[in-house]
Image: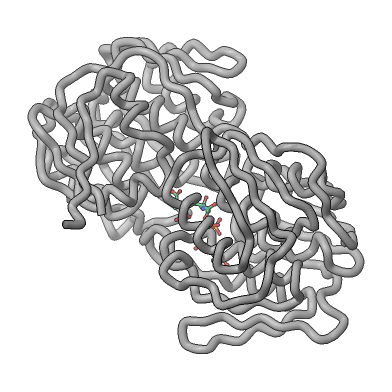
Length: 424
Ligand SMILES: CC(=O)N[C@H]1[C@@H](OP(=O)(O)OP(=O)(O)OC[C@H]2O[C@@H](n3ccc(=O)[nH]c3=O)[C@H](O)[C@@H]2O)O[C@H](CO)[C@@H](O)[C@@H]1O
Ligand SMILES: C=C(OP(=O)(O)O)C(=O)O
């Protein structure tokens, strides 16, 4: 486990370049095992989730190598073997091996996934989709065992009861090589879903409608990679730097951004009075002295992302009055609150109506705190940069799960920050 040590009080300036999207990457890597050829990804973020997925691939005799943002995966000698439960538990997206193994072998056996502790995270909609396609799903303790009869998976009509990113992608992974047509209704519309479908279609899959709430899939026999897949920029990483720059920057340019993926987030910054300069693939955040308070409600895409409600919180502390946040996706996603309070933040959670109230706070002080999950950690990291004195964030591996080359990027922005491994 790593600790992040931040010497606060150094205002940020300069440029930062956003990496490839974590939530695309963690689906693309499992999706690679559907291919009958080696595959190559570019713009792969250097994050712990990628390294843990490589450990899972290795256990199936799938070789992979990763350097300078390029990840090669060779699934041509894949075999069915027990997957390492420690790596499976280290991230949420290991659930994509269910859909991918089903597509490849017609069966899957996998430990329940881990990932961020942000309240209940059921996978009933994933299971419903697999069952609709003819799979039998059983639980054995902490393991999920999914089987099909000799005919394998067949196409199906699937109506998701809740809009779920994971269930939408898992249903696609299972359906691309199933026999016949599948229609997924009430599908999630996140850009990462389009990214995964672009990868699959470039290998010969027949998937239409990604990015809308109806996705139609015609099963195909084989998937073969012909070119390198370039991963889209991480809109959540970009939103984190936008928040940080607006809260404590003297002028910061955020590069490799698709502004259209951040419309709801950008609208909130503009509502606060921040005069963002938005270009084709970059956003400049000027220093802003007076910030208005706002109200936020998280929603499925294109609404305000749950993954950005914690990272925007330190910025809300600077606003003139009380701001409110209601997280409709994960109402209990509040692990940052106790830690920010230790730093002097005026913030509270009203459990009765599920509202987080963030009040103007004059100063934050460096403290010893803990990153309970990735975005709580991101929120605390921004607060640490803004605080007077030193902040030590325990369990910083939760931040490293999803923030590409974080120390280098912050250092380039004038921050004073380091990681210390406290294993010994
Ligand atoms: C690896 C990845 O891409 N993670 C993202 C993904 O997580 P994940 O795919 O796990 O989140 P979902 O979109 O599935 O969850 C959305 C909502 O649906 C509920 N639900 C989900 C599945 C299910 O079978 N049953 C059910 O009830 C969840 O409890 C949640 O309230 O989307 C979340 C919501 O945007 C983000 O916070 C995560 O960063
Ligand atoms: C919740 C998140 O990740 P995961 O679903 O991988 O746990 C996140 O990225 O904010």
